[in-house]
Length: 138
Image 1 (tube, rainbow, N blue to C red):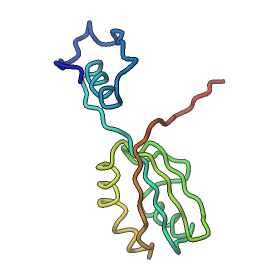
Image 2 (cartoon, helix red, strand yellow):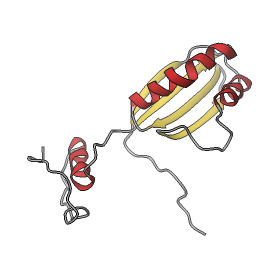
Image 3 (cartoon, helix red, strand yellow):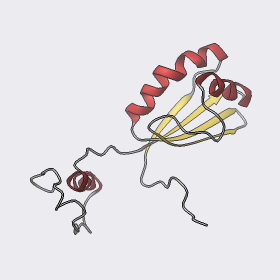
């Protein structure tokens, strides 16, 4: 633990932090000190839809207003889908497990039923690192 935590003040934001031996949970506190905001750990989600097709997946996206290569839903950091021998696999990275579960409950659940999409096998993973956005400038 870092000890006493205080909100960031303008003169403190961006101050150097010596943190070579800090544990992962301590980094949340360091970030909170620097930004004054609570930090949530990103979560990886693997969804395996046995017997599902890419056509069903595309229909779900159409009905929820998600366009190919368009913007992701709020709080989703990364998404891809691929056909497998058993159906389809979706891999996501979300800001938090709560954000993922809220999205599934509020937007996807009713649409899965309408399209006849089978329920997925779901696995969650704590994310160690991820990259997002355009990394290369021209």
